[in-house]
Amino acid sequence: MTIDEKPRCRVCNSLALEKNYLFYCQSKTCDAVYWKINKTLKKDLKDDKIKKLIFLIESGVPINQKKGHYVYKLRLKGEVNSIYVGMTGLHPHERYLNHIIGYKASFRAKKFATALISFIKFLFLGLSIPKTTTLPRDSSWPERTAALSIIRT
Image 1 (cartoon, helix red, strand yellow):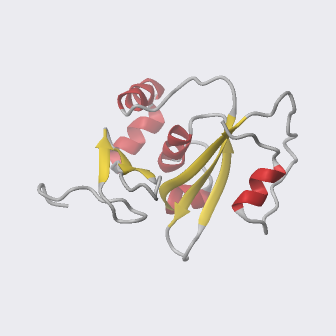
Image 2 (tube, rainbow, N blue to C red):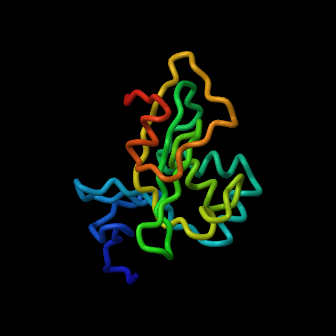
Image 3 (cartoon, helix red, strand yellow):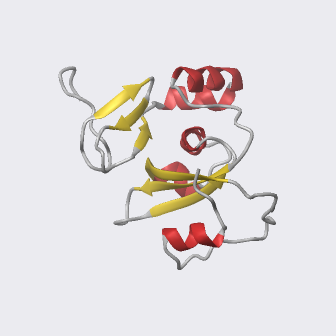
C-alpha cells in the first residue's frame, strides 16, 4: 500500500478506517474488523501484558467488561467461506488480537484468521454452560446461537 492509497476492508474491499492498527470497514453491509500488526509487535504484545493493555486502550477496545459473553466469527484464509466460531468473556477485538499474537489461540485461528466478521453479546440469565457443552458442528450460525439460548443486547 502506498502513501496515497486508502486502506481497504479484507472482506468486501470497501474503504476502512484505521485506529492504531485496528481497521474498521466503512461499508453499511459489512461489519468486518481486522488488525494489521507486524511480527515484532506481535512478539512484544504477547510478552508484555502492560504494553498490550495500553495498545488496546489506544485502539479504543473496551476492556475489563464484567457481564456477558460473546460469540464471534473469524474469517479464515484458504478454503472458500471458511469460518472459525468462538466464544469468549473478553471483547471480541481483544480476543481476535489474542488469536493473532498466539496467546491462548487455536492453531487455525492463529495461522489463518484474516478478519473478525461479526459478534453477538449475550447473557446467560443465571444459567451456566458446562465446559463439556459443544456447539453443533453441522449447524448454521443462527442455529448455533439458538443452541446457547442467547439474548441479543
